[in-house]
Length: 88
Picture (spheres, rainbow, N blue to C red):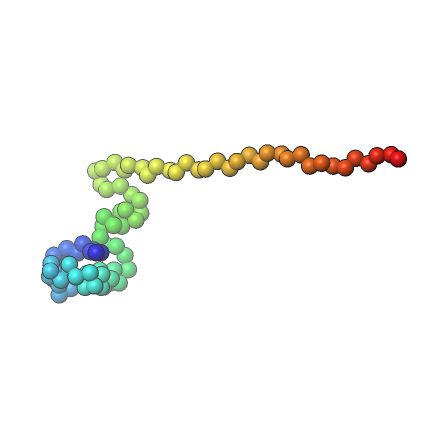
């Protein structure tokens, strides 16, 4: 189940209740209305912070480990027989 956290104050302004907010369809549509209003994540500051990759105020960011690239194998030279002309 998908549920987007909407504050009680916003729920009231959207004509919703905590019970309505648990209905996935209503919840997603309400969140979309909030997002369309400003076209940004102002109603979800923690989501925007995560989206931008910046740490929360007063906390240190734990860096995401960078995956180690898989080394490219070194090609092994394969001898190709070259015909050597012979004198007859």
